[in-house]
Image (cartoon, rainbow, N blue to C red; front, top):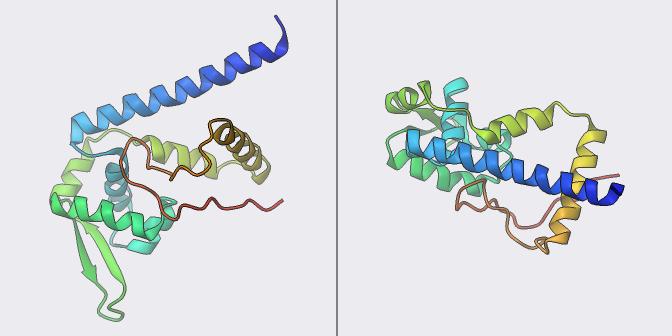
Length: 168
């Protein structure tokens, strides 16, 4: 068999595997917690480190702060977290889990996004550039360069819409 078809088949199978893991884990999360993966990820991070500033949580999740607001609104409406304004600087908002949020997190499944971020953060810059370049090519092949980045298995869009350029 020629090398190119074998490589293409391997890439397609790897993409299938990624989608399979994302789909299965997202269904499990929603079935067990009634939350989306990104919502449960917020709960898990807050269980580890809270109270936490909204801006710090957004940075930790690699999300735009405006995207965080929607996630936090839904979690607050479910009674899983609370927001408190800083007394020193009223512009700063801290978020913390409620007792109900802490209880939900105890037996909840792992979040794929967290596995992905933790794994990527351990890679070298060279490895990250290789992955980034390959994914950028896949995005271009699919004509999806201008598609807003939706959170994994969620309807949330991560603003801003422009993709960051990676320095050489």
